Length: 223
Image: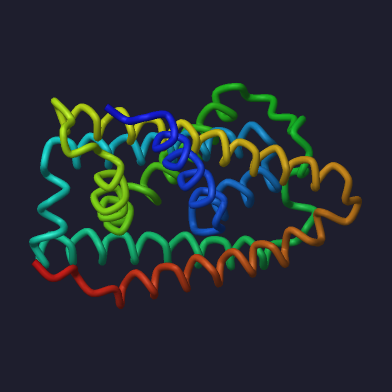
């Protein structure tokens, strides 16, 4: 069983890792700025759900397949890289639209059709989920990071892995939520946010394409 000090180290390391800007953080921030804090939180929820998927897969032993099979790794890698590049291109297209045609950055976006609003949130959730699930590096991260904190005398290592993975994901969701509220607060205090969103979309689009290309050239781990 984990001692309290080791648990604190695990939680601190997890928070620091989640604070590091990456495609997940960028996805949450961009949606919170453009669609309000609700979209940002839905994006955070989608990403966290994707992390739970990776934890479940790793606990079942299937995650080891990515660590030992270059074919499986490359299949997920290319799908994830293509998806990130597709998101980046979509953001670049969005940046070319006139500012007046964009929804306000405030969290009180007025949408008459409630079903349409739900559909937008569902789309954000699914995109966030796919962004995380289609990244084999996330699965490898859990396989490499979490086992370091499992005691050698743990009676059920798989269950301990699940518990630590859930704790990591809970902390990650809190950090992503903080990013969402922080970005939303910035949008409320910045009166030129709509013009800035075009630059944000250009920057985010280029970064997502960069993330995708970086993932594409990642080599499969050696068996």
